[in-house]
Structures are given as structure tokens and as C-alpha cells.
Length: 112
Length: 111
Image 1 (tube, chains in turn blue, green):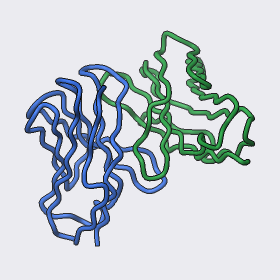
Image 2: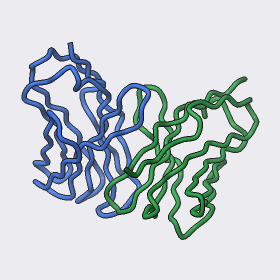
Image 3: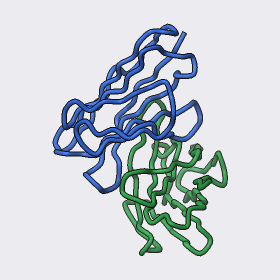
């Protein structure tokens, strides 16, 4: 069966520091991969999605970037974090070109 | 712009009763709809989905109804249990890549 892993589960970072969140998927090949952000008490906002290695689509202008160095690895990064980057970051995968999306358990990011 | 939204932000239901969670969408091009359940501190968990060529789909204790005429989606949970307490999200898509999420409905089950 397929599984998705995100780490770390929680992270506290100072303003201006860099960020790297990692997501890996097991049990499938060539998945679509997604990064979402969820503000407290709100729905999910799609940040990036990828249909293959090195292929990244950005949905909203922001202080973050994404990379997909391997087929089942998706990384969310920032060079300098802002207070507004605080939130719950969720990674998801789906079969290539299909739904549904399956989510990891997220990273709670707090910026101080 | 196009959006997906829920009619009510909270729902309180007696244990054993049926629950109905509603969702409105505005993108007439949407052809795929999905419900997720999110428990505190966890990622959304897939419940059930439906394509626009169907009006109804049933799972274990859950039923999704789609009314394309009025652009309305609902999730029915039969015999609601304490473990059903969570935030429920609807989402829609007009392609096979992106999902647009509503704001969520918090369901609280009373013992």
C-alpha cells in the first residue's frame, strides 16, 4: 500500500531563517505531488504541484519554493522566513493525472 | 472568482443521529467532487468522492449527493459516532490536478 511521510511534525523558526520541509511517498511511482498551506480554522490553499521530477507549478506568489529532486520526494523551501509563513503545511500525492489526493499528517510551522 | 464554500461552519449532532453537511460550489466546469475528514493535528483523510456523471454515491455509513442544477453537494453520515467528530471539507476540481477546498464544517457529536 502507499504511504506518505512528512517531517518534521512541528517546527519553530525565527524570522529570516531558512526552511526545508520534506515529503516522501512510498508504494507508488510517478505520482502527482502537492504542497498546501492551511491557516488556523481555514481551508487548504494549494501552493505547488508537480507532475514529475524537476517539474514544479506554483499557484500563488510567495516567499516559498518547491523542488522535486527524486520521483517520490517533494521539498518545500524558503531562504528567509516571514511571520506570515506560519501555518500548517500539508503534502499530498495522487496517481498521475487522477484523483483523489492523499495527505500526509502535516508540519506545524511557527515563526517567531 | 470560482469558489467552493460550506453553508454552515459548525454542526452539533446527537450520537446515533444522521448528519448532513452541505457544500455549495460555483464553478460550473467542476466535474469531480470529494469529501475529506480532518481530525485535530492531522492531515485530511479521504472519505468519498463523486464525478459529475453521478447524482449519488454510497460508502460505509456515508453518502454523497450531487445536485448539479443548483451546484450543491452534501455528505450524509448515518448513525453518527463520537469518532465522527472532526472538520469536514468539500473540494472540487475541473481537471485532474487541482482541488479547490471549502472552508470546512466542524462536526461535534454529543453523547
